[in-house]
Length: 138
Image (tube, rainbow, N blue to C red; front, side):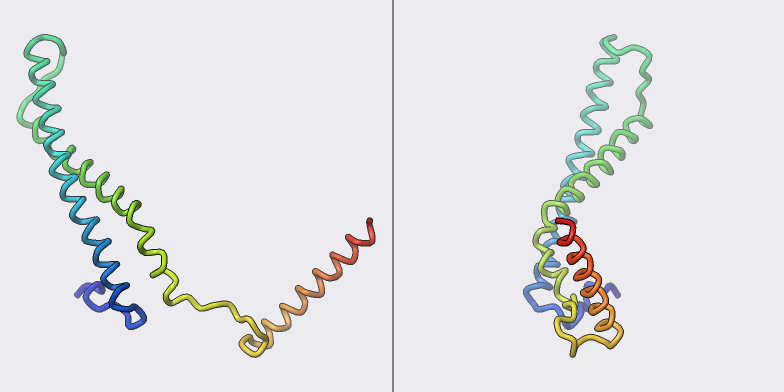
């Protein structure tokens, strides 16, 4: 089964609902884009066919294969564009959820390992030495 049906325990009901709403919006608008794209593809093919029959467009052979190509290409392009646009417009709803399981950096020496404490002291000593040398130049 999908992991969408078994979210982690660290997420609240509201966060799970937000993720589901974003996912639903992406899928729905992807299908809308597929419908609009296929209609646009067929309309474009029909317009080119009419222009070709009137002699305005030369050396263009349109048949049922190009009609199917126009239909499927329009559907796939429309679906991709609408779904990706919706995802980019809805990602701001997911930013608080990205921070749910993030561990904060250790703030005190009791939370850090002896190696981390030693590295922090060495970095502080190096910063103090660099600042001392910079003050000496002035």
